[in-house]
Image 1 (tube, rainbow, N blue to C red):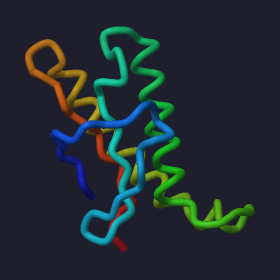
Image 2 (tube, rainbow, N blue to C red):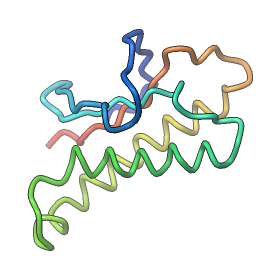
Image 3 (tube, helix red, strand yellow):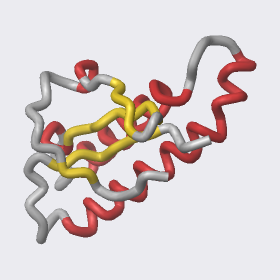
Length: 111
């Protein structure tokens, strides 16, 4: 599982809808740029947590229906856990680290 904080120096487009799924080590991945969120405020953290769950849906759920959703549950759990671990690291360092260009990476786990 990819848990390291990824520093991205690419320029990101307008909001979360513009964050594409990319392939990293053959895994679907979404980068969430931290510059889009005010992590000093609880509302900003909650907004980022919602974005993490949305990104996990995008990289894990392939299709529609209850069966597809249930099949994707382990992927969703791992993707959210990995991203939340990155978020915890960011929140612990936000007062001492320069997070310019930093991103959280939400990836489907390797099979």
